[in-house]
Length: 564
Image (cartoon, rainbow, N blue to C red; front, side, top):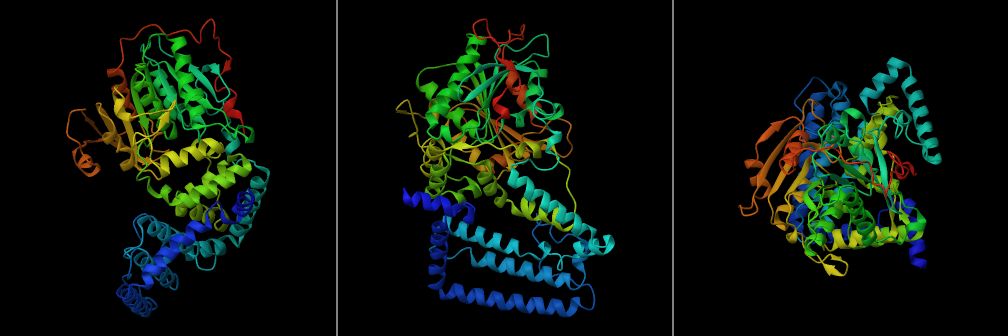
């Protein structure tokens, strides 16, 4: 107990990172590198070659524009401003990029280093280098210097005001500037409906029909418990829930309660029973004998897959179809998120949660931000604190700042059973004391992955094909974990690939799937709608809101979504 308390007290100084995990990774890398003289010689040669290249470049660049000795990666826009082409900023950027390339070589391919430790070392070194990029400092950034000269320093004054405002907001727990323009129930989460069921963990919202007839099978949306549900009901123009309602579907959505320290002992079984199963029971009271189109987003999709496997094993045929949106069922290759998940790191997180009773949203957000630090941390600090610019707030950004907590027991079980043990994919995950298998599921499936997903990489989502034996339509859409899903029709530059693989057809690995799946311009929403309607019955009159015995409790968006 003393150890746990001590680890929890150290956590704010380490940003929730296990120092033991980092030390083991660097020890592994350094030990093997020190025993590989040929590898050391190659790195010394590369360092000498880089130095010679840079000195030759500097000699020419002082006199006239010349070809750079290294180009930044395509996704790296830190040195895109024209000022970086002039002296001495071109020399600074070239030195940084060559150093970055050298460390990339040094941390990859060292024989004997475990893949996980290699990834941790490479990621950590990359973050350290990004911190000292010349783009992050006033005197070494030509764009900032030009702005300072043009505004007589007003950008730095405004940047200091922005920094001071952020510090005050963080200390008081206030939302970021501009978020007040997106009030839940007034500006976002505005699709009309009623809360028709409530227990300790969820409110179930039934949305009011907007068409004279609806498909007989209701749609039940299971959002992730790591987020507020209204990411699927943002502004009216980009609400997936409103889109489904306007296309003639009866939609129900779960809204998770935001747990506190008193909920520390809620378990994964509680999330299954009080979440998915109670919601299905409530939907069945409103629409008895109608199978349900179940939809799970992110962790909600993982939970839905568990529930569907358990239902199939018990002969429960209430699911007409299952849609998994950016949801993993196999965690053997979870992408960069695995950098933060090993036995040491999980033990450290357990100690933090044991002390608090939960994992706070800010602690989770930090890990996601570091996975894309150039875009989510350093470029924002450059714009807001050095250039003095405040970017406009959007509904998605305001939603992202409206965080939730994860109870101690549930999140501990989730990390062990999913990330460390991969129990669901291995048919070892127990529901009601009995292991379940996804292979038992009989309903057709639709799965969505996104191209730039750091949370649920699409190749990991694609592993669903190996775990089930039903007709599966897989869609790969442009964008990331959130933007790729909040993807209404009519937005320029969006595209997707889609392919249906029959249960008795040949397996296509991700690369083969990419080659075979036709590409379409636009949003994936209409494609999914067509698939849903193909698995639905003939439209009929809409059902009542709630039932006589279970009348509506309050208007949407309910009360749980407002919990802070």
